[in-house]
Image 1: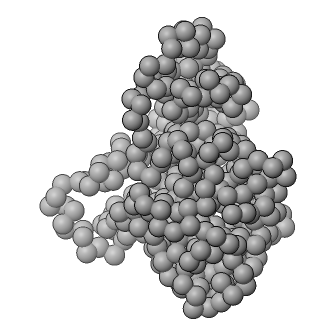
Image 2: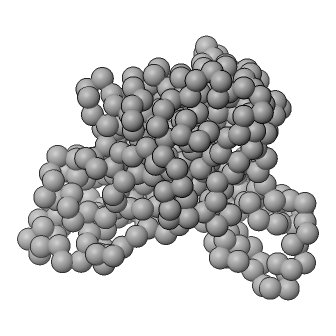
Image 3: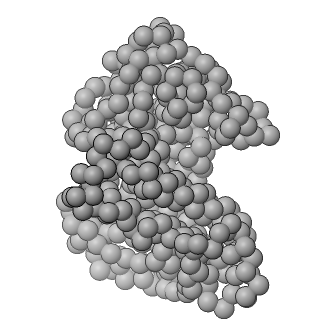
Length: 392
């Protein structure tokens, strides 16, 4: 019911009982009525619009970011800095195909200002270990027109005073969490980076890898994008590293055998080859998959953040169907030599999740229901294109 409330859906017991047998379950991983399923799919379209707005708005003076208020039933907000010309506002509004469920929100700062602030805070987190010790999370939040920096309670007054002075009028909002702070769900916040954790709208976890620089990296799906990555469903947890060497390509470019991106370098102590399920290290990867692991009929399990949240922290398991070429984006792009499984029920948000067969690391989740089996993943044997080497 908490998930229903989060998305502004009817969470009354009578309604939940009424839709329990509904066929619509893939949209959120819980039973939905036909109208609710259509509503969620419509919100997905708004998220795509928000992504387009951010891409164009990044070059538009006065644009302050966009966000979808899910709890309000899926309302797209377009942030616009006060004083921005009416023509610019109209141009931004014109990018939205429908004015239904869309609001323009005036702000004090532009997205460019907030992005500069976030970059400076990130650089400080990476370079200053004494500062990093007190940081719980740092995230750019257009909905509050600020970069929210959460520090542990007990952080030195001199530290907070220095931050406020440095980022005066730059949009830094400081708050505090207890020393026992743990981000909700499967986001561990700090410590080892286990399989099945959120990073933004995707999953991250398999991190026993090294780059050409000899440092530790992790991997997630390439379609999750480049840029700074954090733990947490809304990128609100510990800073992980920069996502780079993206090997997911769209229509008009060549296809790839790996929908993957490397993230790092990781902070010391984050890397692990364990997959954490329901707060237990269910199994540890001890080797990279061989061709035999991809044979039809072989058992496999995936640790996806979205699936785990919807199913009590459990893995989703099935059997290998084999290998194949999987179309993306309505055929505009092809993931070649993908591992294909019988898994039904993988969810949006599982992208990047590690697959395993006993101690063998098979690869990372790419897509569900690709028309060939039920789910497809980028094989571990292809992850080297990101510049990382698997080890144990």
